[in-house]
Amino acid sequence: MSDQKCRDKVEMWTSKLGKQYRKDEVDFNAAEAELNSIRNLPENKRCADCGTQGTVWSSVNLGVFTCMRCGSFHRALGTHISKPKGCTGTYLW
Image 1 (cartoon, rainbow, N blue to C red):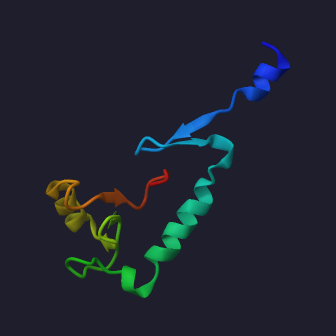
Image 2: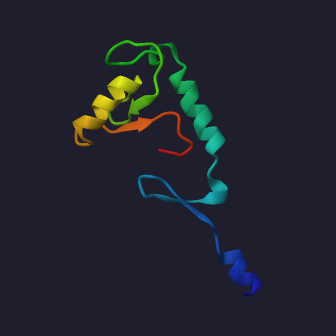
Image 3: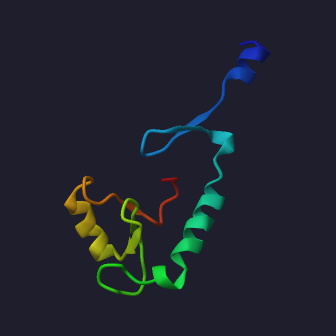
């Protein structure tokens, strides 16, 4: 393979939602740090549904954080109502 072809071949990363990014431009640590800083705000430390301390899910279309139990209810509602995403994974939304 020529040097030019090696330089043109860029490794890509595909999100769970299907969008493609250049792998060298994706900074997982910065994205995780930003998410954790939002989760650690006083208003986001409690589940938006039941008030339990500790949030591990988020409904991205509703803009709320939920506990594990309520997050499972949001998953059961269907994505036309709530789009829940886990907050502890190593991927970008």
